[in-house]
Image 1 (spheres, helix red, strand yellow):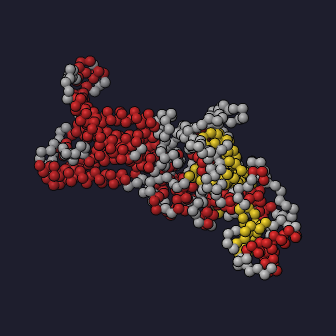
Image 2 (cartoon, rainbow, N blue to C red; image 1 turned 135 degrees about the vertical axis):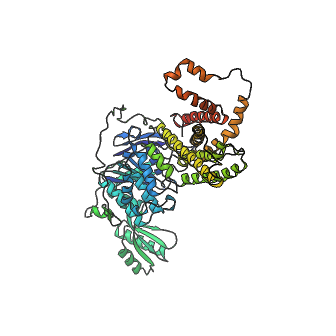
Length: 636
């Protein structure tokens, strides 16, 4: 069961709150419609339930608030708007990436694609999907963790009647297995046709919470639409006959030649028009929407049965027939996993304090909860697998590799012709006029895309516009970016060496004896640039900011360091290796035979302005990232 208690949004400027003290329930095993005209506060109410909007109140999902759920994706499935994702990613790749984020097997993605009817389109890009296909994929994303509760914001908006029938058939099947479904709509007829309970909002306040039969009797009334060139004359005749027969007939004159009659029928109106000689162009039965009812005309808010039907009437006739809950578009729907989603599972260690009214006091009691602070950030549960699928799920990584290898070869071949470029710079395709070699810039771009794409196409947090800043996610991104940078460095050096030997011969480009030391320098440069790009994009939330952070290192930070290092010095680190041997540390660590070889390499690496600038830039960006991303006091 879903229980919304005292939801109140934060007012903006001098305007009243979009949602004001809203309380209602959505029972399990039923479909509940949150009904209201545009601007009534339906979307804001959903965002308040998900801690995406600042405000007061609390929402209990099977008795637990959101911040008490250990696995929110297993309890709540959300569909707010379109599917957030890179347009070049395939439908299958998007679901498999989210499967790693929520910690479910990758086979679950293929299973859901078949359930929602996208099995034949699993290789289609997100940017090419139609609105109906996008909505199917969004529902698959919401069902990925097999949640008990589904929250959907206007899921049928813009869909064809066939697509809407399929959508609500799937929701009906989910509710039939014990799940809770809550969706928003502005169409009262759709609510009466597809929902079991209807919660009506007006200006952010609760007007009524009814079962669908009571809603249909109080909100939807049968009427007769009449078009005639003598509308005023026919309306007067109908009103006089109704008064003479003491019948409750309401005649509403609309614009033009149309009148609407409540409490009568087509045969009676046709006979009245014939007796008075009135020409009739149209005479049709309709289901009329009476608008938002007055609070006093309905039962008190709450999911209680409506008034009894009039004697002699069949209550079943009030409800509009629904599509078969077991079939959607002619195909059977089967639950992919065993068990009932409505089964209540007790969590260990749930000893939360409760107030006098029985509700958890963390988000209730008039306390305002800014977005993102109501619960700890969760996900991805499998960060390394998620990051690998995120990086290689789009052609951006392959395009970046191609954009590095081709210029590197084109730069290395002319440089070798002059014969004045050192072999290390030749294999890295690093002329003196470039601040960094192409491979280092490419590694920085791969790192910047690691966070920049997620901020632009959020995939882990619906409607937040950003991704969770977990330490595990950061470590996974650092590891995958380092691996991609090392692979890019290896491919670049191999491509340049192969091109040079092909053009000038094997004797012209010999392998140097100190190639391990050169490989360490080359790997440190590319990995450092990749990490700078990643942290720069993570701090500034844009890809170009990560690339700019990489370019700033040789153009701004290195000149400043050279100015500082070229100044007068009183002490030096000369003789460090000798003193290390004399102190006994090298022998204790049992690597004295490697000290003489690697310590000069490491000390020389740290003495280079570019390496020192990278180290300082990484330190500064990491501190900024930890402060901005992992601090719970900072609003995202």
